[in-house]
Image (cartoon, rainbow, N blue to C red; front, side, top):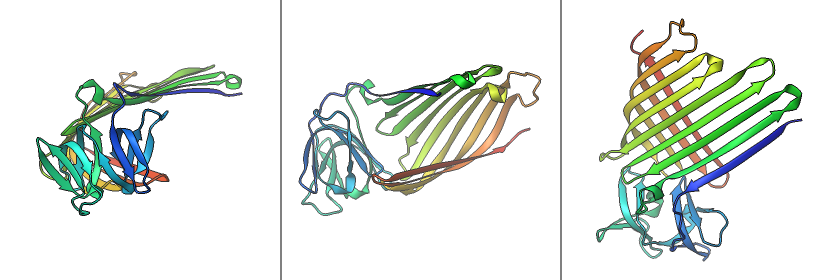
Length: 287
């Protein structure tokens, strides 16, 4: 017999009901709060909805909002302000971002992502998490798992982090402990399609005799393709890795300097599939 319990929660602090208006091509009119738009999906929640709904961005006819948003376009430029989609404007001028009475007009299909910029610093944070317990009496196995993510979007940068933990016990074998933490900082540069990045990864895994592996990466990258349906980014930089083992006699303990190169690819098909792949390669610069 196997018993599995999983708890899932999400966090969106200070999520008061808003009065954004969205009208779809079929005439449906929604009034509530625009949560975000990414991967060709507009996340929206009204006060009478138990949870957010996903709307096809290509089927949105009109948008009106007096709240401030960060809008990212296909050419890599970022604009902040109130947003408006006009159904009767030219296709390449039907989406506007207004800040200090200056409006930037583009085609709404050129929009890659939209994120709200709330007045409160804390209200911009988004997060989710889950906790799981698995019990296998016939094998005398008990296993706990926990996962959490936190994200913070701002006008010109994005911060994202994730944490995962696994603890397992089984009669007659050593306990299993694996903890990992990762964080990434992406700063969008003034040059179109370019961004700076900083990443860190921490790992502890007793099955690998690894007390701590810490990796710190700094570099830059560029989008080769960037839309709300598909994207390809390449990046590179320098990484410093420190490893410490439970068995200190291991000769691999210490700092390692490495050159890092990578690529990130994503593609989305609304309501059917999402594929995301990241490749990282490292080349040692010292022994």
